[in-house]
Image 1: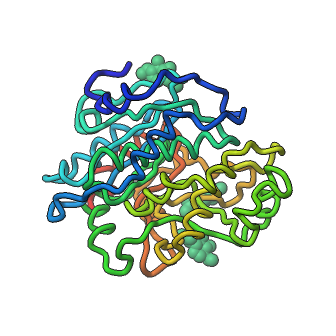
Image 2: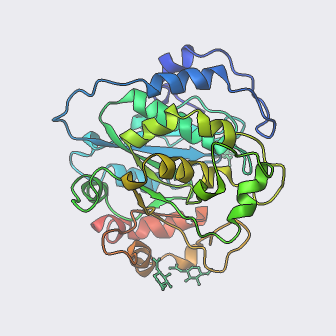
Length: 333
Ligand SMILES: *[C@@H]1O[C@H](CO)[C@@H](O)[C@H](O)[C@H]1NC(C)=O
Ligand SMILES: *[C@@H]1O[C@H](CO)[C@@H](O)[C@H](O)[C@H]1NC(C)=O
Ligand SMILES: *[C@@H]1O[C@H](CO)[C@@H](O)[C@H](O)[C@H]1NC(C)=O
């Protein structure tokens, strides 16, 4: 299914030994290829072209088809000089039969990063996000923001608006947009999911945080993540309880709040609707709910400095109604 223009990270790929696909539920020794990748990405890079337009690296983490790729195609081609504003990286679960967007800007600008299977309730989603960050760090020194998205995410604004919000907004210079919460009611159960004392001494309970799995990190924080070994060695331990086990909702907020709390906004720019949900799955929007009014409501936040750039979680059937309002509503601003 993968056509050759997608496989741009070829040198990266060839430098790695053949992978053994281990079950993500079993604690495996750190894979040598991942370690090599993270080490290379964490090394200081010379930042050239300081005067060039900085880019957003869009990181798609998926285990199914990218249903909304026609909408993203419109997003990526919505501005005249769009090609200078972004790069796209895709981590697609190799055990699924995934078809990739054909033709267009999305297709030509996507790089497939060497991927491994992902599963809920295991650290595999953290590993996948780290692989995406590492590949994007190495690929282009102009990648200054790194936005993690899934196949259920949609854009709420045009590419130019998104780029201006991140790079030209004086209220949050060089901050990461990641939710960091310490008041979740079952936080202690989440902390002890790997065993009562498993996180000690590196992560005392007072440092343990929770937040949305979807974030936008600065280049500095992307490097903090790929450089980290200490916390990763804790968070990659398997859960001993079935519930609540959501490693990816803890690793990134905990690491960044321990290392650089002032460099984080504490706020995610990806809107999600948890109203009336308690089973670990947020509200899944269906086609009849899609309207210009919904898009406007999803953009609004209670904060005076922030708004939402992306939203989740949308059922595949939403593609048609979303495409109908794309030009007049979503990418109008
Ligand atoms: C992705 O789409 C292709 C057809 O376009 C289909 O054959 C395949 O089963 C789909 N994969 C998944 C994981 O749904
Ligand atoms: C959030 O989801 C609930 C249903 O669970 C729905 O009633 C409500 O309208 C949704 N809110 C927004 C802003 O879409
Ligand atoms: C804003 O605050 C109100 C009241 O606390 C809440 O009902 C609403 O969901 C919040 N909206 C967002 C976007 O967080």
